[in-house]
Length: 397
Image (cartoon, rainbow, N blue to C red; front, side, top):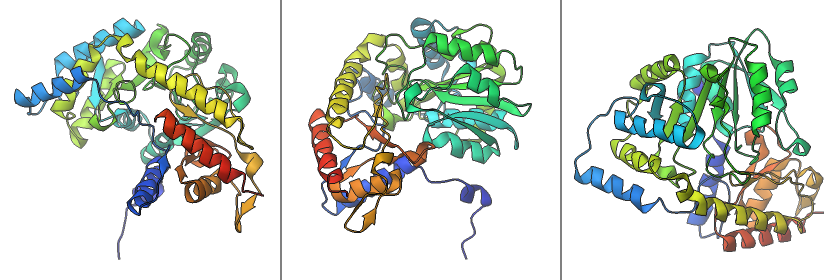
């Protein structure tokens, strides 16, 4: 009889990946599925980045690198942090990983002991909770509301801190809500953090370049708490490089060294070709990706306008990333052909089966009253997806 470890049985499959898999299975059967489940830009990787990878292959840059990434790449990342965020990091403060997900896992596994409490505002990115489970940490989830743009306040953070609190994990711009924290909101949180010497913040800033409210604000900008901030970034979202798997962590040196040690036993350095591609991306001026940001903003506005015609969806106006996160509880209790909608998971399955549109239920992010809708696809597909959703939802009674 198959015997799996308690560790693997404890964690759940990523629902975003699960929905993507179901979409592919239905597509393979000939069903015309519009998948809005994965957070994946539909743009092509910039030519200069692709050329850097081609050159790396032709130049035989195919050997092991430093576990944390080759030093010139980490120098380029440090320059990017200074140029775009006014943050001072040295190459020794930076660890390059196989995607931001590994960067997060490195940090959590290096800092969290069994029983340590970690504050996570909800909705949260799907993997935070599961990575924390692997470390044996105790999640302390703070629920937020659509009325407050899904952001926690400093007062709420303070209320949930105990002697066991070791870390807070959050993202800005946020996956799944698209919420963006302002400088003053981050400063207020920093004021709470600095009162608690053993409290660290993991600030996931992977959507930095997809921000509709002006310049990105980094948590590490405040000198009085910078030595307790772990900044997570990468190339997948801002540079349309999801498949390249290039993640970045910048942190106090002792944390970076611990993560280098951890990574050295798991994967070693990430793909050398990816590292060369990342190097080219780091040297691109920030404005070179603005055309993608502008396209996402146009799509967001299109989606919000079309959603007004769909009964039962309540949404705010997300200020970054490429998601809309509508509340759908007005549809609970309704049914179609004997199938009753009790929660957002049921609604997601209904929309997949009836409208052939793949979304992710809010249960993946901490609240099954919501659905996550990725608009990282063409306007034509978005228009058709929303038409199908409207038609399907109108069948519910």
